[in-house]
Amino acid sequence: MSTLTASDLKTPRALILLAVFLAVVIGIGAAIGVTTAPGEWYAGLAKPPFNPPNWVFGPVWFALYVLIAFAGWRTFLSEPNGMGMKLWYGQMALNWLWSPIWFSLHLLWPAFVVIIAIFALTLWFMANRWDRDRVSAWLFIPYAAWVGFASLLNLAIATLN
Image (cartoon, rainbow, N blue to C red):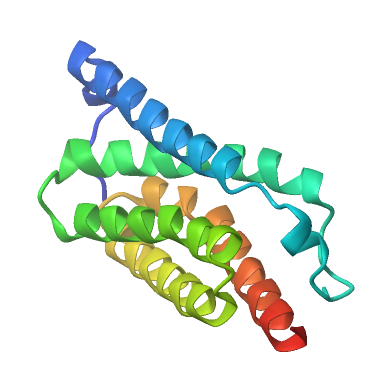
């Protein structure tokens, strides 16, 4: 189980790191979202009936980025150089890479490969954290569910187009 205690999470250093994790994850995610917003190209794609309306994505990603930041922060506090942190960095880099590949470069199948890798790293992160910091693993469950859904959506759109 977790070696983190409530007092570990409340130190000035920990709180500053939390602010940094939140600012970086949400800030970079928002910047990528704004610069790669769906446009005419995306509007013109054939989509499956389960495609959510565009307004859903912003609030969902904001909430997920908060959870992702908290999990990264907790992992960094307990094992800054451990495998869990490496998995967290890997999924985050791929997460930020997916939107430019999809929305800017219009590469549907390469984006699918990237999202499957995100899904795999997300599950691997959860497995890695399960016995070390169950809270961090739980924080990734909504993310894994959304990435699983987004993978299916990516596959459906790529297939239809």
